[in-house]
Figure (tube, rainbow, N blue to C red):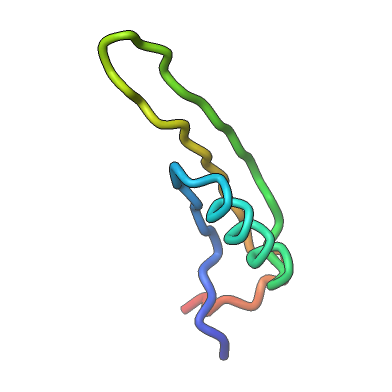
Length: 65
């Protein structure tokens, strides 16, 4: 049995890493459930952008025990 989870969250400030992780999960049979990106515009703070996504196991092959 594969070591899969029913839900996987991706959360990073690096766009390239986000795209790579999401593409890998899709190729492994996960389905995108939701996603978002955002940033805070502030003169006082240097906030980074954040990319987030939630994937669900579309194949249903995770260990349900």
